[in-house]
Structure formats: C-alpha cells, structure tokens
Length: 248
Image 1 (cartoon, rainbow, N blue to C red):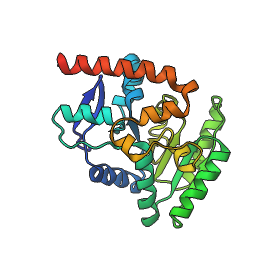
Image 2: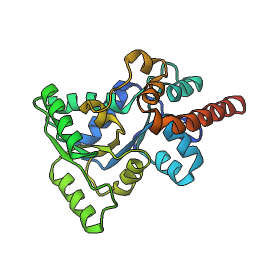
Image 3: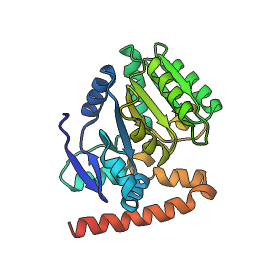
C-alpha cells in the first residue's frame, strides 16, 4: 500500500505531495501496469464533491488526488503543508508525456473529438517524437456494454501504462472509478488538457495561473458558457473555505 499524506478541502481528500513525488509514484504504477485512477482537483471539483456525496466518494476513493488550482493548493498550505505546489492536469500530462517518450512507455488518450485528438497527436508527436500514443474519441452518448468491453480491450491491448481521460468533470471521474480493476493502466482525468495542448482553447498566461486567476481567463474566453459556473462555484468555494478555516 502506498503511503499517502492528505489534507481536506471542503471534505475532499487531496494529496499533499511534491511534483517529484507525484511523478515517481505515477510512473511506478504505469510501468507496473497497475489499475489506478487519479483525480485532478480544482475549485469546481471540490465544490461538486462537497455537494454530492457519491461524487465525493469517487474523489476520496482515488489513488491520488492532486491540487489543481491555486486556491486548492493554498488550502493545503494553510493546513501545514508548506510549499505545496499546484499539480494541474495540463502540466501533469505534458510532463508525463515527456517522461513516457524517454522511457518507452505507451500512453492512450480517451475523450474529446476526432478533430481535437488529431491536433493533439500532431502537437505531442512533434514535441516528443519517440512517444507511443493511441487516440480514441468515444461517442458522447453512454456506451453499450459491448462497446465498453471493446474499448477496454483496445486500451489494454495497446500496452499503455497511462490513460489520459478527457471526458470532462464529473463524467471522467465516474468513468475512471467504474473502470479501475478493468483497465491495466493509470487513468488520469485531465479535463481541458486535450484542448489546451491541441491549441483549440487558449490557456491562461503563467502569471494568471500562478496567482489563482486561471478561472478569470477562462471566463473571459467563454463568458456565455462559464459565467454561471464560476459565479456559483467560486462563491461556494469561498464560503466553504472560510467555514473550514474558521471552524476547523
């Protein structure tokens, strides 16, 4: 059993760990083809977990839950985990692809659209020519049992040690939890990372990410789609964080 040190953010158990520790643990699991799943926890994830007990169980049942988003990392630092960095989905995916290419470790991308995956594959292979990568865009509807069995077989047959899952929150976390024990790889829910690395969505500049303003960049980029989500989730996070820190 891997030893874990975790803090709690609005009831979600988040791992307190360095980048080096996270990478070492993930690559160890991947090379051993262990069936694991990893949740990348930003404000939206922890707020959703605080309001949905079943979803919270999925987050707390993950093999690793990383603090994606400056506010989540800040909450861990407030609990005594000094220097806790953000470990975000896009950054983690890029770093793992670099290591996977160097270590001849196949990876699999599951999710998004064929067009986005085509651009993503082109970008990753240009950056890491030795990377062995397989892409799959599943239907947006629920899969039949036969389709799901076939998808699992394709992933396992590929030899992938890491499966990047880009189905969006909360679908990707539920999918990974349902497939632990069936997929012989580390599944990592990376959210919008496929779009960022494919270039179909522009990521916030580093200074905004470092200062907890990535949400603002996304809101300004897609105000019609995201204004309600950020208004509600950010407000609930601030209230929940204040409650947790004042009445801990």
